[in-house]
Length: 329
Ligand code: NDP
Image (cartoon, rainbow, N blue to C red):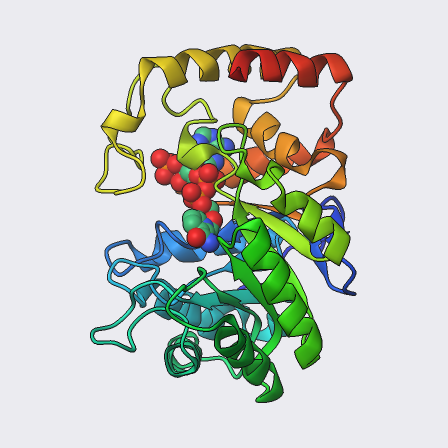
């Protein structure tokens, strides 16, 4: 049956301006790092994307290497586009990235013009798209002059293969330099995709200030600390959770008693605010409008529903913020 999107999808979601650009992003965006690979069922991915879009999530984030196997998340999303979302292309912001290991040999990773532009061509083929909305340099590459990597991003826009460009995982000084080069080239840096949550605070150590000064937006990835800032692990490690699966980035050893003790206290505080811990974690990264969008992952439709609820209460009292800092310290 042909998918027909919820007509009320734009009623509740806040949309925030991305830095000084004219582009608005939803307060919550969905990433396809996990649960969209060739190892997952297509139907699950399609259900998650439909549930997200039906509630105003217009931004879907990918990378060349998301899977497993690498490339398969883009193939899955390409199939969802073809079979379900094709009529809605102009309502979607689709991003992809290049920089981490994707293919064999010297051109299968990093930031050379050769790697970046061939990777984008491959991504477009897998996605079945003529262009992506945002093309990122996934990481800073000390082996390649920054002018070359930024030149590749600029060229992608001039070729009509990307509408905007961004950087991810760059430190404050690397970001400042990249932003300046892109400005000179005439393709302003739209956004920085950065690891940020109550448990990961590096954004606050200089990078936030650079982005604000330069008018560049920010999108916080893993705002739930990959599930640790939710009720997922408070009692046990569920068999269907990321930590119980084969993830290199969250495994049983990461679920420490110390982290759980903090998450339990935060969970109590969230309950006093009338929120789930996952909702409070998302509201916290978005507090005071510092971050443009919270980039979440999900393995179930109910998780998306829960997170969307965060947008009903994004404000924090000063006492609540202080209580959070006390728990984290
Ligand atoms: P999160 O911190 O949001 O973790 C998502 C996981 O948390 C879900 O898979 C689920 O775990 C659990 N979860 C989500 N919602 C709920 C809920 N309401 N209640 C309970 N548990 C919940 O983000 P991710 O680590 O998945 O990263 C999000 C996106 O960020 C990626 O898909 C990718 O697009 C981007 N990213 C970018 C990086 C970069 O280098 N630029 C690096 C990493 C991510 P479970 O699966 O166990 O159910």
